[in-house]
Length: 515
Image (cartoon, rainbow, N blue to C red; front, side):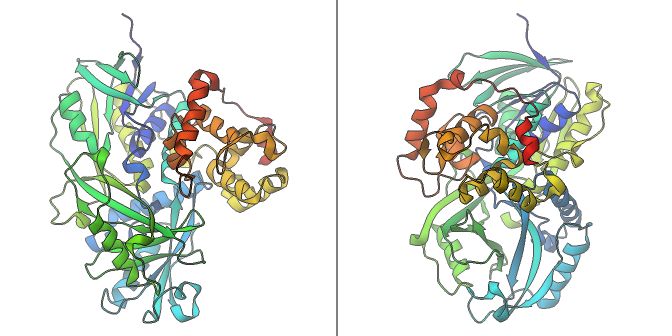
């Protein structure tokens, strides 16, 4: 039987897999990405949601990693200014922790390890005179402020997959790789779509970007060995009702030498995390435990005037980080850098070990650089200056863009206009189409979600289930009524995938008007 043959099959729809698929498709390679669940279902939607250099990595002397991440921070701020934006962090000085001179040195390095054009530098502050000092216990008299960036992590994955598809890649969610055989020049791969018949495809090469499952895919499916391994580390977060009114985030130093963040989250909440706990279970079943909840509450309460108790927690999430095993004695010291293993003895196999959200684009670029010569691809790297879908805003200025959205769609409620602009950037015109009133957006399926947005997410963003929309494409699951998932799933099921149709991507005139 004739089989479709791809230049590259990417296994894993997290940030690394989506980034590799995008980079390879942009170089003209034929690409298929298969993901056993939804895009960003696991590790990539369970981060602290930061694009950052990693200030604490300096203590572990990971200067190259921090420099690379700081360089990528600038690249990503320009590529997706709608879902990535600057955030100022306040570090209260705890007299019993790291000395002032060490913090000043670390911040100086953080400011100067890479060129910084978009973000202000660090500075010392008097907390009793600063807005960020108000929620803190009065014993914290001074502190430091520095810059990093916030990201909608799951949306970052989706945008990479969308851009890969726009450049010709085939994106297959809810499709597991279940069997593989390797020849001298190509792979034969068996795919199992959810609820569908088995399919067989061929590939000239395979990229194993399965994250926590990288070793399992290597051994059980691809039947290949490896000299590398990942160390699974659980990171958990809690969400509480908003603890402060200002727009700063906090980084707290703790007696165990760990740090946690307290970050403004979805307007009405504060996000607190993360933990670092070695993990040995099924990555798909990871969950926070009572000890982690208590730890995060206790550490945050050391700083805030109003203590935080487990009963204040309104939502939690956990993820398993597949860190490159480096024999570190504790989980928090394991490197956040990445490594590749390329087996080119027969049809090429590239496996990805480790990595962090901030450096995904560079990881993807380096991965394709290694595979390209084996696939007779001479096109150079290209993604450093290419915006992600919706990110092509004038001067990469979100505030200017939002002003134009408010003018063109004056009928939209301000909160809805803000969320649409933040989630979809320049693609807001595609979402809204010919709507001229809120009624034109269709039924409000669950609070805040109209039919127009749900239809857009199914047609353009690979959403197939209620949780895809409520928790990964948006965060409307926060505060939603208990029956919201069932109502949304019923709306999707009643229409069926065929009813949504495949929308051809093109340059919509409405989009030009917004820009």
